[in-house]
Length: 416
Image 1 (spheres, rainbow, N blue to C red):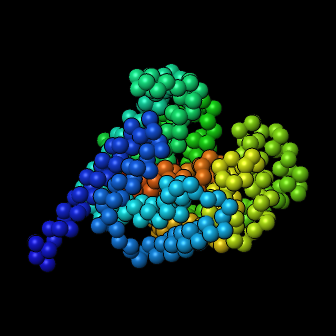
Image 2: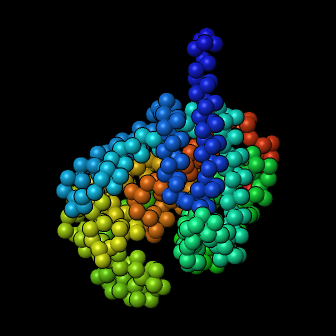
Image 3: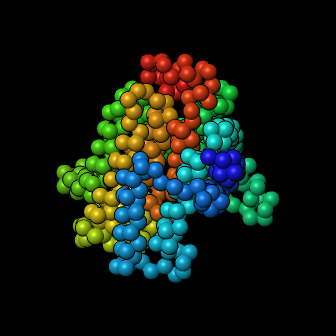
C-alpha cells in the first residue's frame, strides 16, 4: 500500500484522537455545571468522527439487538398514548440520530491510534480527578461554588436546588470512575489519583444523602472483582443475572406484592425509595394490560400521578413501553455486552468494563429514564473509555502495569 493511500486513514485516526480528548476535557465543566450537556458533547463528537463509523464482527450480536430494539421502539410510537408536541420532544427521532452518533463516538476510540487512546485516557484520568475535587469542595460547602456561578450569571438558585443540580454530576463521575482510575494507573502517573476520585464521590453522597452513587460503587466493586477473579465465567454469570432481571422484572414485583412483602417494605423505607416503589407498583399494574407489545414509546409520561415521567427502573420501563418484545431485545443486548468481556486470563480492562456496566445498570434501575439523551450520551462516553482501555496495546502500558497484570491477587484489579 502506498503512502498516499495510508495518509487519509492516519489523518482520520489522529483526528479521532483529538476529538475524543476534547470530549473528555468538556466532560469536566459539563459534569459540574450542566450534566444534561453531555448529550450535546457526545453528539458533536460523534458527528465529527462519523467517517470512523464501522462495525466489526464482534459487534454483530449487540448491533442486531440494538437495531431490533430501535425498530420496535420507533414502530411502537404508532399506538403510544403520548404525542410529542414537536420533533425535539420525539424520542423516535432522537433515538435514530443518537444510535448513529453515539456509536460513532465508540467507533472513534477504536479507529484512533494507540497514542490517541493514551491521550484521551490521560485526559480522562486527570479530568475526573479535577471533577472529583470540585465535587468534594461542593460537598463541604453545600454547593456554594455552583450557586456563586449562578448568582454571577444573574440566575440565582435556591440552595436545595443547587445541591440537587450539583449531585447530578455525581452520577457521571461515578460512571466514569472505574475507567479513570485504571487510566490513572497506566497513563496518569500514579494509582493514587484514584483516591480523590473515590472521596469526591463518597463524601458528597453521604453529606447530601444520595444513595445511588454509593450503591453503584459497591456493586461495581463486587462485579469487577468477580470478573477479575473469574475472567471466563464472571461475565457469563453477570449476563445470566442481567437477562433474568430484564425478563422477569414485572413478575418479581407481582410476586413480592402477592407475598405481602412489597407493601411492608414500601412503608418501611425512606420517602425517596417509597416513591420509587410506588412507581414500580403502578408500572407493574399497567404492564399486565399489554404485556406482549407494551403501551408504546414514551407512554410512561402519560401515567401520572402514579408515575412521574418514567418508572425510575429501566427493565420496568422497557416492559411498560415495549412489552416482552422490548425486554427480550434489551436482554440480548446486555448478554452480548457481558459475553464480550469474557477472557481466558485476567484482564483489568475487562474488569473495569464490567464495573462500568454494573454502575450503568444500577443507576438505570433506580434513577433515570431509559431514553434520556444525556444519560445515553454518558453511557456512550463511558463505553468509549472502556474500549480505549481494552484496545490499548500491552506494550503501550506503564512498566509497572505489566508486572501487576501477572499478580494473582484479586485486589490487583484496583492497583494494576
